[in-house]
Each structure stands twice: as C-alpha cells, then as structure tokens.
Length: 76
Image (cartoon, rainbow, N blue to C red; front, side, top):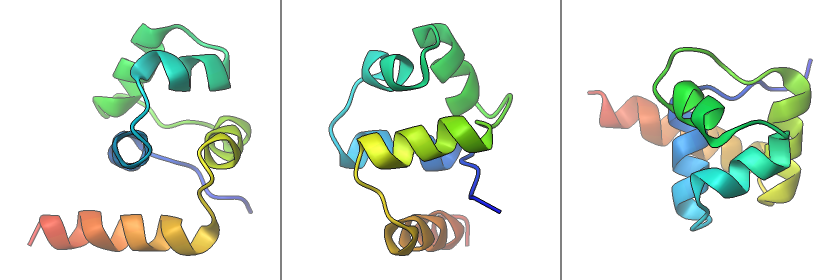
C-alpha cells in the first residue's frame, strides 16, 4: 500500500520545498482552498494525490519517514 499524506505531513513537505499552497493545488489538480482544508487536518490526501505530491516535490520513503518522526517528536 502506498503512503497517504495527512495535513501536517503535507505542510512540512511544502515548507521544506519552499512551495506555495497553489503549487500543491496544481499538482493534485484541486483548488488552493482544498489544500488548506487538508493542511488544517480536515481530511487526508488519497493515495494518488499523495504519490503526485511526493513525486513533484522529490520526497522518497526515507524522507517521508523522517518527516513523520519529526512530527511525532514535536508533539512530545
């Protein structure tokens, strides 16, 4: 099963890659408001959208795991 990105992960990827909300919106073919909705934690991206974001912003499985660990550590 391919990974699905949640809002925190998406926001961190976007920040790390210095991308704007509209850049992510273009990748997943949705409105900017939909990206904001995801980043606010109201829903997750599906597998296809998650894979598109990971490909567009050069995020591999290892980097995604580090992002997830960083988020987890930030909540301690």
